[in-house]
Image 1 (tube, rainbow, N blue to C red):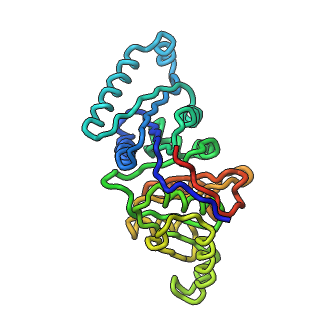
Image 2: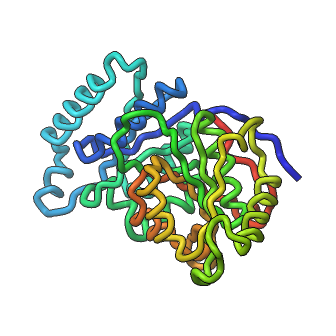
Image 3: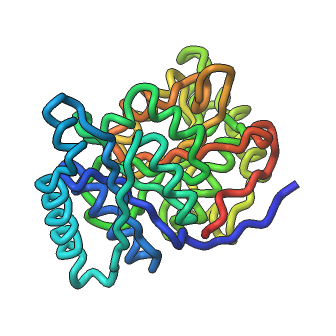
Length: 304
């Protein structure tokens, strides 16, 4: 049974940043989204504590130089938003990043969490390894991982599907958050190239029929199917998605996560970490509630 959804964009965004240049792309995208959606924007930076003995001494004494640098970075951040129509609120937190981000997002009732993907920075390497799975388990909000420069609003969006409740939630979220975007529903049928005779071949008909049944069970706004393209291909999801993103200049992939024993997976056994590493475009991950994993017509996250 279908459930009604609110066809509205998010109203409260949380940007996680270390205030360095490595997070500039995430900041640009958060600023653009906040202006596009007329949403509130909160900016969070997390101090995880000292890493070496010299830093311990400064930390215990109350490192004035560090606080001065943070204050200067905050002033520069506010200057970055001059004339944008967006006035962010600034928030500082101490402790592990993977704990501070969900706690702040919950406290501020954020609808979407935005972060960069720099591999060497505190708020970048959290998206590699086990921390992304920890965040995905604890965040109730979608997580947007920004890689590309924010030159314009998202217009070419890809949603992979394995016909699960998680991928249904991802598709509904894509249409709810980006009502002007062109969306591609992408299904990878595993089992070798012999599984399909090409995207328009007779052997692809069962998979395409399943896509239609999947869409019939989704809660989509009026006119959504007119800007929806369905692509069916055979092979490994990871490689097929990476190739499609590059060849079709996809700007954003919205993927649904569902939990299996011991690991968060996204579609056909691919782990969240591997897919986040492999896609060149920005990526939004949406986690299905534990009791919705096998549900039909699960609704997307409600705007705050």
